[in-house]
Image (cartoon, rainbow, N blue to C red):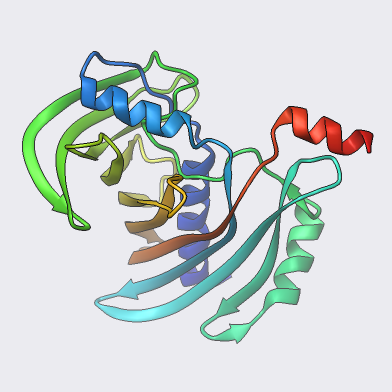
Length: 251
């Protein structure tokens, strides 16, 4: 694999590691933060049916390669979420079949998954590793007046995550996590990492991740690269409750 391809694979692995990291949040007494946790808690069953990741490798400001991968998540007969690769493009060339063969040889298909959103400090399930403080700044994010919270999440089996969460002042709805990084960085080739996640409210009121942008600096074989990646999440569907799933199985 060319260094450019290795860089894309490296950043992709970091991004999907972040997606499944399971960052958890404690429950500080701040009322606006409590509202954010409540929003996250009531929207845990939404799954992004389509996830598209596009990465561009830059060297000395010039494009050295573009990688795009499309993954679709569906529900199998056991009511488990499974994810399959549906399209892979390398510099515009369709290499989907080749990539599927590689995935099948390494891991098998389809792949089960239990978490469809990027790691975030609003996870209500485990709330004992978060430090958070108001940064006394305001910012307009996507037309919403937001308050900023600096957070740090310590993980016993992984790096510490740090970033700034922007919450809508009126409702507490999380709008964005800005410049999240991991310490230590999970790969020796990575020299810098900044992840910004943007959320949205659907017309039905469901809160969910919309887009994840990453800027990474890396070095491999004495060659330095920047990798700019964007992951978009769309075509959401709601997982059936355990009770409903059992009723469907009984039919």
